[in-house]
Image 1 (cartoon, rainbow, N blue to C red):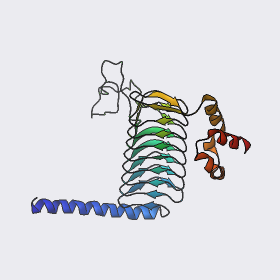
Image 2: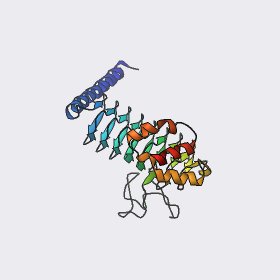
Image 3: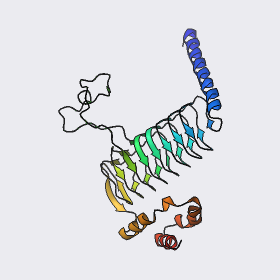
Image 4: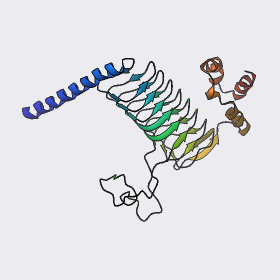
Amino acid sequence: MSSVRRHYLAVLQLIRDLKSLVFLLQNRKNHPEVRIGFGSRVIDSAFGTGVTIGKNCYVQTSKFGREVFVKDKCAISNSTFEDHTAIYPNCSLNNVRFGSYSYVSEHALMGRVTVGKFSSIGPHFLCGYGEHPTDFISTSPVFYSTRRQCGISFTETNYFEEHHETIVGSDVWIGARVFVRDGVRIGNGAMIAAGAVVTADVPDYALVGGVPAKVIRYRFPEDVVRELLEIKWWEWSEDQLREAQPLFAQPDVNSFLTWAKQT
């Protein structure tokens, strides 16, 4: 590498560092109650207590509850996070909502997704980035979309709805590298095996896997599932959850149901 190129790269790095320093000072002035990492930019957002934003993040028009953690290099816009949620590094989230005690692991891409409480989403999750028509003459959006995905469009009218709201219920576990089609509903208590391609709704407390994903089995018998859905323990207060903690961390569902009915 020539000395001129090294000098040029050094100047570019200095400019980037100065910009990051400016953002840091602005963040400390505008949001002194929030721990915001070096290089992050925060615009038009609201925060509860104990929020941490990692380094080199971009956060815009979003709302954060208490004790929310956003790790490094995340891009977040138009989203809401309830108390005690976590977003791991390198996630891109747009128009999402997370219920309390839920998290998503690194390298997730999510758009127009609502996640319930106590749900765990593995790394490289992909959901909400639009669909293409299967019955049109062409699948190219230049013919049916005004969004100009490739810089040009031949229409001034949208002929196909490209994005749909996706719902992930409460107490859902999603493994690594799962794709979920736009508009799908994943039921409460469901489990999605790693690598699955989910193209249809997932029933409550079902375990699904494969390409496309199919129901492998249900976590509990039908009558137990019905009782769990009636109890809706994910809506309990924190005091109730702490009291019931030993019953959550064991496999005897009947003892849990008996205890829940008596409280």
